[in-house]
Length: 253
Ligand SMILES: O=C(O)CCC(=O)C(=O)O
View 1: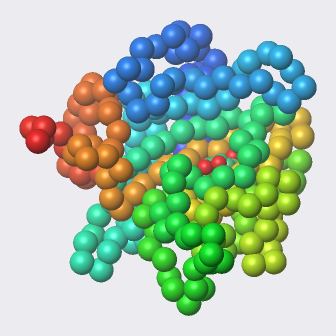
View 2: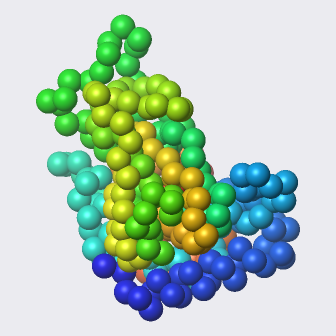
């Protein structure tokens, strides 16, 4: 799906940025995320090492190009468009570099809040109802993730119908189903409903695992005409399609 040369460029640029100490200190006050390089301690170590590259669209054209890459763009747009409204908004892009011992291994639903929450007294959404997807992530593995030791993304199937956050960090379960792992090759893509419980399984191998994620939404999560602040110099020469996706800033209301 994604070509070997695209994968090589994305990984090379991600490595260069993650390993550039100057980026740790870069001012991110006008950016979406607080840091460009998120550090984390691998399990069993006290040394913080670069883990997630954030605000990627401000860093290089190779990342910006992926936002419009087909078939990713049209697939995401088809899922997020309403019958009376065609379109979607860009809401984030990161590259996760899981060195051994590093992973986002807590079960969670994305976007902080549950979009169709249920009170305790209602067990779940009726499975016959197709709940709208308001926010999704296109996962783009940049390395092969073939074994459980490589730390695949894991999902609890059907849990977007739960109307709540994960019920158990040790043994999460929904409708009698436990974790399902996505095994894949670099360049495959898989799409995640932000409401489905998921995590990155621990990387217990000696392989470095790379995962780029691109997030799109059907609505602006903020009231301004742009979901994320993006430095103006990253938008120079941008196409209309790109500006429609990331938002055009108008006079504030
Ligand atoms: O590392 C992973 O596979 C999961 C990443 C994750 O939690 C996310 O993209 O929301």
